[in-house]
Length: 349
Image (tube, rainbow, N blue to C red):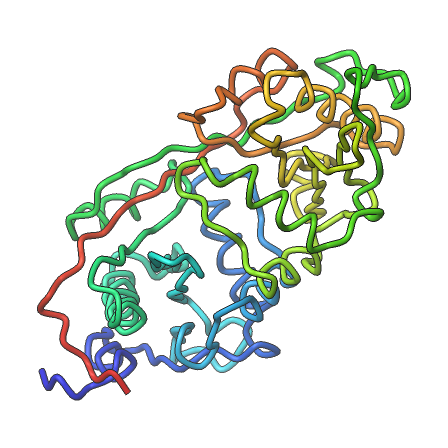
């Protein structure tokens, strides 16, 4: 096949008959893609759902070129456009100085095993090569539910290797007695807790980057990317907190999120989205204190519990802390590395 073909050209050429593809459109596709992802999650028993708002956040995030980075596959036999989207794919390059590209995608369960998923993955890898054309050492990753055995087999057939596992952990107040007395939580001597809304967003970003700088797979979030994080529909900054030391310097943070679309699967819960402690202030009980305040605030506000995600090989042994507090595994995900293929020579324009 001609090297002058674009990834979209190649996708069209490889799709089975009865399907067509086009670039994604924000207003037209966010709802249909979220419904598609949820159908796939329900099929494999993965409890976390995706909202239309989530997809809009993804599609308008830092570094996303919607026309080039996201495609949808339609069933030509279906006239209703909201039902015709049966697959999608996305390639996104992070902002790290040694960049990687994450590829995403799903095929509706009714259209699997027809070659659509293989075609979408091939498109994703083509697009990844374009995004990494100036970085020969850049890597390609996929992050997906660990129970998605079909997707894992497809990735492994392309030489992909699982490199990291993550757990989604949940604490239910019916299983762990929790009071709603937030101010009754003892703050370690020499520290003070303030609402995250009182901290300058740039200081908050710098603190987050420092806290996660020694975590595997993490990279510094840019100012533009941080604005995206704080403006996400799931962010609950008014329920988030920061720890200050005796000099008024921020040394730990807990940022709360909420995903109402999960209510039918995991209940009415809040999430700890970002939890980090400055390296010089670890092992002083700050993380446990912030979690307890988060839990009591959630109990006070009528939630049924809390969830968080954790790297199962966390260098700070965070998963052990969470288990001691009362969190239990609810689901999980796995990150794969896909080897780059030097034969993927594409039109770079």
